[in-house]
Image (cartoon, rainbow, N blue to C red; front, top):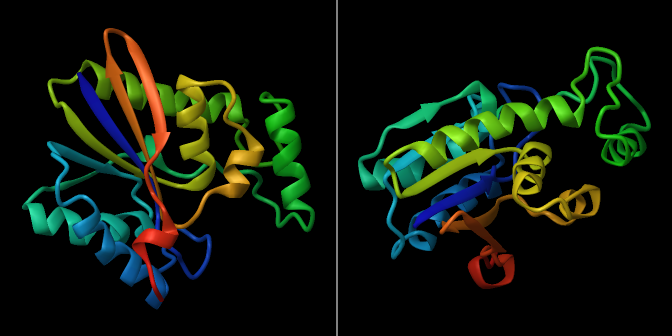
Length: 186
């Protein structure tokens, strides 16, 4: 049996690679320590974006685990242009997974990147793995296991968010285990 925890980063000040967490995001990152208190963790992988690394740092430090940064967990680039109607374009990209906008990556290409990461994790000897990423890519990783995941799920995700994927006998069971109402009182 293997357990993968997919974590969407905590609240950040923006979308750039160097964007910091907000004060609330820092509190959310710290809350992951007690949230994972009774869960085993063998390895932690993170997108190299500052907001993802900062989200998982308190938990990694509390466990004495190294954060392994992997570009495959980086957020999908919708476009290199500043799109005023970015949300409509994002929705269209889930309707047509091969759709790519100028300077951007299609969901199909991003899913291939995510799938290569997941395949490596599944084949590893580690049994309890954390992957820290971003909303779009987290949705696509979930979609690798269940095609029902799409735009609506992405729009319903919180910052942070945590999903558990249990793989046993070549079958994956997915569930959202994060509950903002139970975990935060800001």
